Length: 145
Image (cartoon, rainbow, N blue to C red; front, side, top):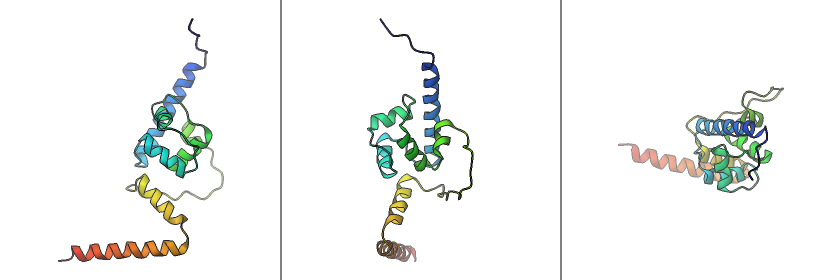
């Protein structure tokens, strides 16, 4: 005999589908590929709990909701407040500094690279800035007639 679904099953499915829609839209806005494998890597970098690509696929397709640690990490990845990502709408705003916005053309891997750069010690950041400057100079020399 098949169990009869409880009264909240339909509401839960709607919540999961609405979350999946918000997550996919937020990823698109942040120019981050909605690839489960890519999101597993990003979650690890943003403090999420370990999950499989299949679990992430369930979130993206509206079959499951992430646990709160991953909800918070996903919100950081896409630049939203966790409440906003989970439930939609804007959460009540208290006094806080505004979030620095990333330029629209920067995708997830570039943002991760910048955040990794900012986490380095000052001497290593200087070394990388010098390396980037050398590459930029070499490129501009090649482009000159």
